[in-house]
Length: 481
Image 1: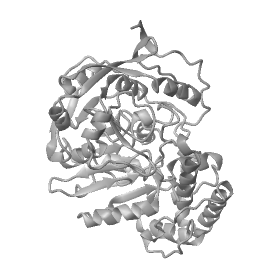
Image 2: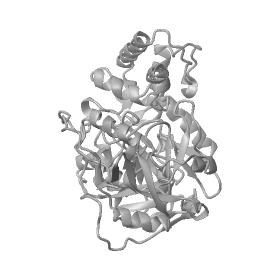
Image 3: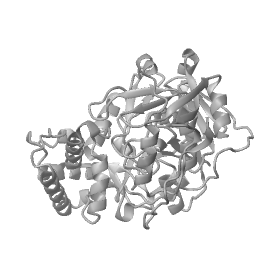
Image 4: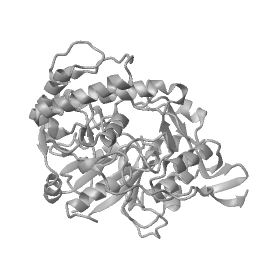
């Protein structure tokens, strides 16, 4: 029995959802459950079935179209009950009426509330032209509030204790009003759980308590020992969200997510369940690059952006534009390094690479007088250092060469076996490949030991102080080019 951890090496949107769907629907072993281990309702994992049904998975596992496959939201997830209810409604509309029946939620997971969402949107608007590209879902605010108020941040377990939940939500509402007393936010859909509320800036606390209590009655809330039971029952797929290049510590700050997007959270959960080392690390990449929202994107090409619209990704009022660029081996090597290596690679959107003969390969950056092939890596914890790297990347120019076969290029650049090729959106468009022996070029597989800035209390990834970091070195280059 083999478990898998699925992680995106890019900026997100590489196709994690469709890969997880294939693993559950047609993979080498029947999958028992999908475990979500980072992020929250801002995830957007698009799955299209062979008969044409489509769903954008946010909190449910992307294997939910396969009958019997369960979803477990671990303590590293940020759980938004209102968004979850809306997602369950859409799944029912496309033929999956039992998604909530197959769901378990860790009692210690943080709750994302309408107050977090209002805070995040107001803060992003206040940044003006310096906006970070928030998804507008309150994810960063959920994390930040939990760090500032570790003993008062609402968690899933509070949904079964109305008095405690009311106190915590009232404090959060007051925190929002104190921070942005003149903010004009529209109320989110707290009617998602059939709880009627007045049309006000943010919902009344009692209405939120009623909605969240209904959530706790509808889903199965479990303890931290539940994962071990899932792992014994059959193969489990750990489904990551966002991408390594958006990681809270290793991404290009401040254009990052408040989430650990590497394999680290999943491997922490496996270790706690006495199953360390039982999962294969599967990395997912597109045959070209994309990025949703602002931030460094060295190989961005306006011609590709205009010529390769993504059916399920577009301009978002909060996140911004969906951007397209050429395959960036410098960025992908960096992502693989900071993620601690991987075991296998899935390459998606190969149908696009087949049809677009103008796609290129970037194997180096020109930064001032330097020709850069490798970005510097260092122990996590120093966001100032990452911000310095960001400023340098914003001035970098790509050095291109023609693309031959993207699968061969990626296999050679990463040293990883390509075990899945995707030529379209459905599970039927995937071709598995048996791993062949190879000489690994990736770093040794070691869990990322970063302390998480995005969790507090029992939900912290690794308890301990944040490393101070050393003086920022120059980008690794080959001298004058």
